[in-house]
Image 1 (cartoon, rainbow over the protein chains, first blue to last red):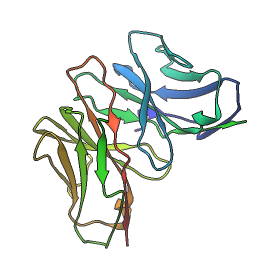
Image 2 (cartoon, each protein chain N blue to C red):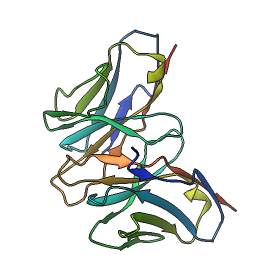
Image 3 (spheres, helix red, strand yellow):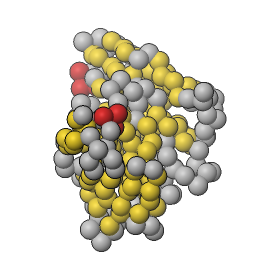
Image 4 (spheres, rainbow over the protein chains, first blue to last red):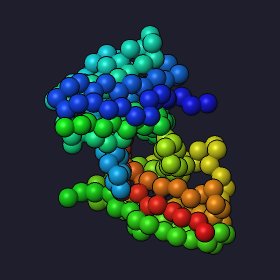
Length: 113
Length: 114
């Protein structure tokens, strides 16, 4: 039973446009959600997070939206840059479980000049 | 720079031959995690240490063990690797007393089983 799903394995966007990466989850009890970016041959790096009590968090070009009724979150990157090309993972966790995270399968973003 | 270091980056082992992967951190974080990631799949948590307390995931095979001799180091031991254990192994750390719950990842060790 996969609790966190990223249904799009890949996304291609033109430089300067908006990239929207989507993530769905099944467990309404998750306390927080995070997005990670991963370049080849490197470990995932933290991008942005959101608590389950909020519906939006913004950090520079990155904004995460949380729709609890739909059990859906999305990451918006505006404007997209070629350096944003990477695999993006969403993850979810519980406060009372030692900080463990459940990851989605990832979406590979390609930003074309 | 504070970081999470994994050694080796690439490991080749033979079927059934024990192998140990190493992780160290200079972040002084109290929690260390081991994930297994197979191609195009989500990283899957194997176990984690909260300080010295070991927490195994229910579906982690007995073939996988871990040791944390001190705050800085954590090891993943695969007692009898099978072909299905070929994967990227990611170590991560976090500091749970803080208000944020992000994990910091090492670069991973890619394990090949021949």
